[in-house]
Image 1 (tube, rainbow, N blue to C red):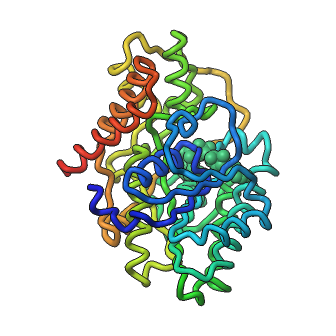
Image 2 (image 1 turned 90 degrees about the horizontal axis):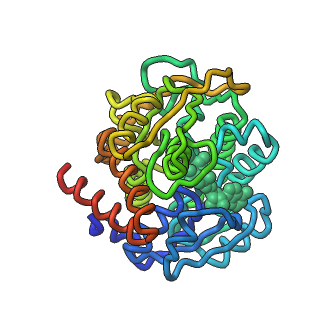
Length: 355
Ligand SMILES: NC(=O)c1ccc[n+]([C@@H]2O[C@H](COP(=O)([O-])OP(=O)(O)OC[C@H]3O[C@@H](n4cnc5c(N)ncnc54)[C@H](O)[C@@H]3O)[C@@H](O)[C@H]2O)c1
């Protein structure tokens, strides 16, 4: 498996949001392959996968990507071979509570990263992570394709939609003329996996409730989401970067990363599987109406990534939830985050070998 990603070995890889849920897995995986990982994130004192992993050799920079001057300086100092831009205010609920911060971090933050890329003179391949929520959601049953309309009602979705418009403008106005630079956009669906401790997300809420022997409160048990495992998505980002470096025709293109079309499950489906894996885990359904809108149905069409990148999720829904449940079970039993996460990665490799 790691042979496939030799292109990253000894390369300078800059990850914005490297301490986040996805970023910490990407940092772990790339470090394991032998990449020189640099990160940009906000400093966080709360329980955090990255801090507990203590990965050797990672060079962290803690500052706000809203600071364009600083960001450009860091880009110019590192001169990265690869960039993965993940830093964002990533929570829908928080985007209602702090919409200005969400727009500034997600839209202007992305603009600043593009400015950083624009200022580079070395060869660089960049993957910009937006979201499945960038599509104007008509709650249709078919999956959204990359050329569907960009929209988004809630501030999080709209901020990511704005980021997409900024990327398109920067690409056609400046970046496509730079022969040393290649960029692509990754739009992934809802991601689950171990090591997520974010507030107001299903899996962390369930894990914390299970640990404290309290039932988890479900806001929207019938909501359907394109759940997929964090390792499937991270592998997708890495394949995109690798392929983009080799194939100029992918430059400037967006890619969806979602589960197979028959793999759309609801919140309650996730809960039922967790219950099978976690002894005495329970839930309660919240009857009161929530005061903010979140889409109930969201499907992605990932044919483009299937065909052009030869990527598809290695894990079926059940396997993905099981791998996630086992991470938390092992973590609560051993408190050894690094061992737990490396074991999870090994298990994931086994699934890939069977593909
Ligand atoms: N988790 C999901 O289900 C999901 C689904 C679709 C898209 N995404 C996108 O994937 C990316 C990563 O998501 P995640 O779940 O790992 O998020 P996360 O909230 O776990 O991590 C966010 C990271 O960004 C950093 N960050 C946030 N604001 C910043 C700022 N202003 N300056 C510098 N750093 C900042 C944080 O320090 C952290 O490292 C985000 O862009 C998110 O929108 C996530």
